[in-house]
Every structure is written in C-alpha cells, then in structure tokens.
Image 1 (cartoon, rainbow, N blue to C red):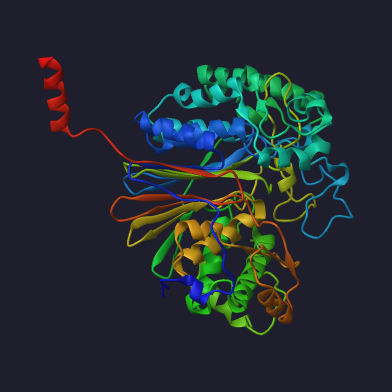
Image 2 (cartoon, rainbow, N blue to C red; image 1 turned 135 degrees about the vertical axis):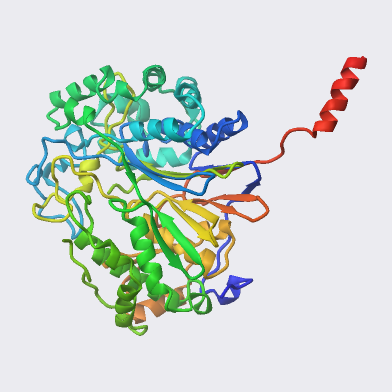
Length: 566
C-alpha cells in the first residue's frame, strides 16, 4: 500500500533542509560539493559513471581526508548499462604479522566494543591494516571506465595543490579528534595550526598529498603495492613498531563478489554480500517487516518505531554471532535471507513489549566513512562506500606523502576464538550498504551512506520510507532515524515526546541524539529518464544533475551556413 501523503499517517513530521537536483544526462551525489563537481566534470567531458565516481573519490580523499583516502578500503557496487551488477571488494586485510593475541582487550570496555589496552588497534602504526582503496579505485576505472587514471585524478591534484575552503563540518571533526591529532606533528601542522582546530573558511593546502597523487597518476597503483611509495610506507610502519610489511602490500588483492538479492513487496533489493554485511541484514529485516502493513501503521508512530527497534536487535544479535570474513567463517547467509527464518523471528515479536534477542543462527568497523552515488545518461550507476576507519584513521600522516593511514585493525575483535577475531590476511567486515533497488527489472533507486554500524539500519529505514510510506527521495534521506543494537534506543530530533513516552511504556530505553548515521546520498530513476539526486542534512552532501545537451542537428547546420555566408 502506498500513501499519497505520509504525513497523514505520521507520528512525527519534519521539514527537509536541502533541495534535490534533477537531470537526464547524469547525476553525482557526494558528501562534498567539490567532489560532486569533479564527478560532473568527467560526465561533461564524455566520461561514464565509473569515470565520474573514481574522480569524485580521489577528490574526496583531499577534501574529506578525515573520512577517505588511498590507504583506506571500501566497496564499489556497479550496475552497467547492460543491467549486470558487479561488486568490487577493496576492503582492508589484517597484516600477516598479526593474530588473535596481537592486542590485549580493555577489561573496562563497554559490551560490544573493540577497545584494547593502550588503544594499539585504534591509533598509530600498530592500528594499520593493508589498504585496498587505491587498488580498488584503479581496477574499477581500468575495467569499467573510459578515461585514464591521470584524467580522473586531475581535479583532486588541483584541489590539493591550490587548496580548498574548510567547512564547519571539517572543523568539527578536527575538534573531536584534536587530542589524537596533536600526537603527530605532521598532521597537527595541517589541522591544528597554532594548536587550535583549523577554522571554517581557511584555505587548506595539502601539497605533499598533491605530489603523491601526481606520482600515482604517472605510475599507477603499483607505486603503492610494491613500488617506492609502498616501500617508504612499510619502512615507516616498521620503524614505529607496526605490523604492516611490504609483503602485505604486494600480496593484496581485491575480490569480485556476486551481489545478494532479496525481494521486498514488489521490489528487489540488490547489494554487496559478506564480509559487507549491510545488505544481508537489510534484506533480513525487511523480510520480517514484510509481515506487517508498515504503511498503514504510519511513519514514526509508536508501533512502527517499536518494530524497527525489534528487527534491529534481531539483526545485531545475528551479526555478532556470524559476521566475519567468509574465507575464515562460513556464515549462514541462506538461512538469514529465508522467508521461513523471517517468519520464525516475526512470530516472537510482541507489539506490547520490548524484549531481548539472542542470535538465531551460529557461524559454521569504523564509524566514519563516505559514500557517493553516481549515474550517467547511458545506464551505468555506481554506489560506493569508502573509509579509513575512524575519523582521521590512525591519526597521523606518513611522512612526506600527505597520506593518512587507516585504523582498520580496530574493526576486528581483539578477543581470541570469536568469529571476527584477528587472523593473518583476514578481510575486514563492514556494515557498508551501497544498495540498488529494482522494480520489474528496472532500476528505481541507488542509495547509501557513511556511519559504521548505523549504515544498514539507516538504509533499511530509507527504503521503508520510499516503499512503505511513499516519501520522495529527498524526504526519505532526510527523515529522522532510529538506531539500536540492543543497549538502548537512539532517536533523532523531530520525534514527539508522546511517541517517545509510548516507546518507553513498552520497555524501550529511549535517548534523543543529534544524528544517527552520516550523510545519505540517493538517486531515484524515473521511467521517462529523469534522475533525482538527494543528499541529507547530516553532511556537506551535494547533488549535481546534468541536463541539457547538444544543439539540434538542423539548427547547428544553419548556424554553420550563416557563418560561411558572412
């Protein structure tokens, strides 16, 4: 059932803070206007969505360096004009010198956290995993793009060498990470000038990183995966007591994965498989919700929010039991996706009361990321989520390179004997959810966001907003969200106190928070060829649509004849 106006069935209403963009020849939505512009630059030059996405990612590694970089990792979900879907896994892997006892868990850490004594898995060279981002970006471009590596890197080099204006969002990130950044003189020089967080409106120049990108443009990814840049990086890590070696870099490989697919009402959800667990749990949760008429229950009503909280707790219980690199743990994907399993879990839900959930199956990440969604006029679409782990990754710059390493080792469980314990060469799991939605075989939506464990819950809610509540794509990405993993329910502003009180009456421990997850970006595809791009208030997201086109052939011919006559 679709409602023409979801507000008449809403427990909470809200006002969108941003405007969508429309176009017919292309759409780029990223979390920074300069990155969106870099992508559109490729489209206007005749490139395709893959060219645009990789140009935008390199630009983001400059203007959103606290979130994404060539030493990070991520997932690219690519749909080609032929209708085929490709998932390129460029997630990081644990160094060969690490193992289950590499880190000592912090006995004072809260349940479910990965904290260790001395934060050795979170800050500095001991936190670094083998990077997959650069190789993943370059392979996507080589296999599916049309431009050269030098072409797509050029905007990023330009912004790094010329500088760009610091936004309030970047300044806030620096303030939150200031104590860690102050430990490294090189990163502090850029982001803590005079010992204070860099101020909005300041022009930030990252010359060393510009030179690194120029070297990558000339020599390709091999410069990091075995070349001089990789040797310099590995030597520095070794000098500082870290675990990454040149062997980890030369041995790194991306992985092609078959996407997961699952139905929800009259739609099909398509996304990356584990070890990117987001789409698996999105489909799992939607399978459970399918047994309820969510549209009739209404948006953000006590009944709907209660169901969202319960299915989230179910998903997180199963995730804790079974999430890990598939090369090390055989998780029960088929069971989690089955309608029978959903019915079994649904039967235990009671509308009157919150309850605790344990895993219903058994096995046989970083909170700060970035996401982009890109489409061209030919039918190619990219949804890609990338990260260096936490804000500013491992919290330092590799001397002389401008590169910020990831701190992906904090995504592994420091306790031995668990599904996601540290193991040599083990691939990092994630909640990344670069999802596409089809109806009758035609692409309808592409969507994703940053936000660590909040990614797949946020995408699931956005899909329900679109499918169950009939929201516009702008409304769906900006709507207030809920999140829980079983330790209390977090809700964004705009939820009326009466709704929150009703949830508390059912046993939910409800707390209001500023935001859940990061800046979502989405594109809606209409049958007439129109694309609508949307970005939400939670980041500096900017959709840019490409419309217009070339002159009519006959008109152009008359213009040429007129010029000849003169």
